[in-house]
Length: 237
Ligand SMILES: O=C(O)[C@H](O)[C@@H](O)[C@H](O)[C@H](O)COP(=O)(O)O
Image (cartoon, rainbow, N blue to C red; front, side, top):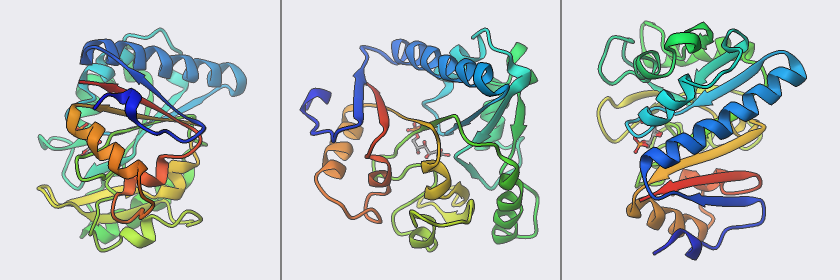
């Protein structure tokens, strides 16, 4: 199927690119524009990004954008509960590819803490996130199973974390794959972002999106929580 076959609701738009590099370049320009507009309007800008493997090129392009990085706060939609030195750490990924050069001046707000257990780490991140300014730009990813951030179908805290009007900012979650212990921003916090973007690649994710658009059980496919105004979808094969 093609991205133009998706039956997108009003307020949800899609951009298709021929390659991951072209997507990364365009996404970086779009995000940088929103961040510089926010800095101009309010003095600071807040960016929340996702981890995984596919955002590397986007991070590298974004790091090259001329921005007043010292006035940018960066955080993660979700984190694996591993120290920053661990190969699976999203904070580690960010430090390696985004918070480099001038972008190293950005303030990074980490969800990870070396607490006694995952629940305590989530409580710690929840408190810390009360200091997070309004999110100007959110970049989500999505798995083939319809998870986004670390809102995984079947995870014990999913129903709570998916509450549209919830006040908690961070939840402990269990992923189906290692590292299983995750920390995720709640749906309510993620949805409060002013500009929401979903960046995905590959045919299988288009199929997941098509299935998600055809139903409304958010717990079955948590990405459904974000397929509503306003969302920009970036896709490449
Ligand atoms: O820490 C994580 O794993 C992510 O934040 C996760 O939600 C990711 O965005 C999706 O799993 C898609 O990952 P890819 O874009 O690498 O396929």
